Image (cartoon, rainbow, N blue to C red; front, side):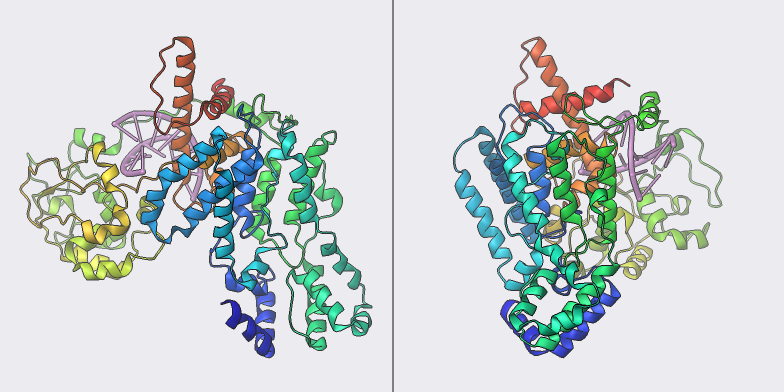
Length: 589
DNA sequence: ATTAGGG
DNA sequence: CCCTAAT
């Protein structure tokens, strides 16, 4: 958009005026510019909005609560993260991600080791950034501050040892505090109009800038005045936390850093008219803030959390009492054991039909119909309706049926470009191309004999990217397959593309756990992995479990020198130690 | 919808 | 990661 658009803005004032107004009116949270820019170009952070998100997130990871012996510096980490995030966010070309993943981790590892190359690193990310924000508008929309948002709103609350970061945090605070951003209010007392009247264009522009956080080239006094007045009005409606609220009691007053931390936070989220914080973001922030000030089940041991409050007792108790959830055997096993329930069209004996994945197709996609046609022999997957047995492969996403039955051409129309939905997401919205699917399914021959067994784990890595490239590599399941097809069919089991966890992700996870608590996966996801489309809350949970496992090994290793060969992608000991702490703490229950 | 746990 | 059961 850059030049052309900007020009456009300048020229078509009236039009834009309308846009602007309607934007604001429709949703005060949508700023004129961000409305254009908001296409997830840079992702969003719950607290920072655009661009800075990752920086903040990563920033606060880096020097959060844990005491990593290596004591990586701020720059190290944020650069590492930036690098990663940037790369990741350019997502589009997924293939590159994978390719890069390893490099990334290596780089980060390097950084961790204190190896050099950091500078290039920073430069790299900076270049990335600037590449991204290469146009004025984005730059403006990105915010008052183009520098890295290295402050750690979380970390600050609890990291007395992160001295090295203090200075930076102050900077960050200053940046966010941006004293001028408050000056606007001085116009808000009713005399504003005359005041505005007397101002020079230059001043008006200035005021405009202060109010909307961007410069304007428009020299039309009226226009500027209107804008500013509008801004003034608007700012009045936005909730503005009082200072006391902002610096509020949630932080240990004795802890200067905590204060500065919170100040930074609040200034960041303080909804000045120019960058209003959408409700949900504010909400998330509240959650976090609450969690921080109220680190219930989560206050980490030795993590330096300054405030372990009593209010959390209840929750913690419930945590302690928590009993291991007992799993009864999965239904499919039960069904295998139990006699087949009576059916209209009785199943032929001797052909026990597991129906694991049916669910995926039947219950989730065809459910509406299935219910109507219940008992109807025509119904596709009615287990009793045919004497065959279809065992849809595990994880075989619905669209595979598409592939199965439709000319690939159509599939390719749907698949690319769109953000790859996770498998589970696909499971949730299986009806992606609804009509089509159903028709297809219906048309599929009722007498399929397909058995596609669970694929051994080994095939994982080759399956990378299979999701997106599927149209090329898909294994077309023959329409008729002998019942005892070889169990080793490649590519039948479609898993989510395996994306290695990067160190920064791990750190974020740890940070999340330490502040929100083990088990708060969805919260952590929302707060710290909001931009990572490929990490679901379940993934977080799984990863945590693995980390805990790893950390346990660490301990074992300490005891007997049974040094388990360090896995290639093993997280650094320091990280694992932190995991251990958190795990231990929780393990008390 | 989330979370826990088995695989 | 996937899958399923419990909440």
